Image (cartoon, rainbow, N blue to C red; front, top):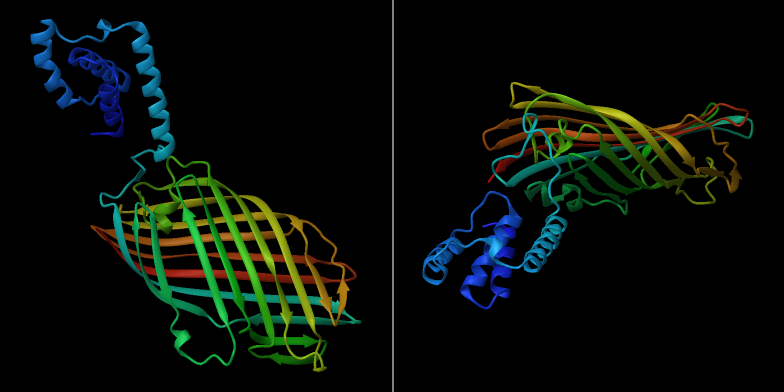
Length: 382
């Protein structure tokens, strides 16, 4: 029995004092629903009444037009309420996209996160550069989902090791559907290591000497959502049956700060702080390549043009104005390799962000920040 049939029963019970009237209402409800499904128990109750009380089959024309209009309006309101509450799924071509036969999916997952940051600028007649990377951050976890909506948890084995006061925190939440989706990721770490230089002098920067707090948000909209499925590649809540591609509309935001953290009386090198604020819009393309129905390769890239740039830099307490220029981009890429076999799923997927600003002028300034995530998972559909 569908929800619409349940509304029909409620209408039958609430309207009409006699059995004959209730059966007439049932006929109206059935005509209003018009989904090709019968009301078996109602028909079973009304069939004998048609013989014993009226001697004729029940017909909705036996009731007044006003009652028919009221019933129709009530059912229409109910249908709209149901559609709003249940959020009817977006239609797609089942020759290209299908739902798995099993609604539940359990999976084990291994994740690896990486990042890099770099700057290059003119300072006091010289050139200051820095190229740094934090420790790789990885986790092992498990999750369960129902039709693509689920929960998962992971643990980083490093939490059991002594960290000498350093921290490396990553948080990520994402949602993918055939029409639109988003990724939200936050990173806070002081485990950067690398080399910074000023002209011919180099300084080896160790853990705890720099701090980074960065927030990344990406969103997409699929124009060809009837044939191309992003979740088929990234969450496997759908199955791509035929190869297809689509133009993608994208939006990205990168917010954060990066600064040195060694003592103020340490005059070995420059103290610098960079605040990053980038907002971009773009158009890209994604493609799902299906090999022998069971194997899927996904690649997509969206270059978002920076439309708002609120970046500035402070070196040894002096703020350096940074001229804003075009074009600068936030590149967003996604990839996946998926193998479906019966109820088993094997996948390697991930995404990367690369944001950069390059100003060739008298006061030269260049920086970049990149963030990437890779996930290897094994799943079983229940």
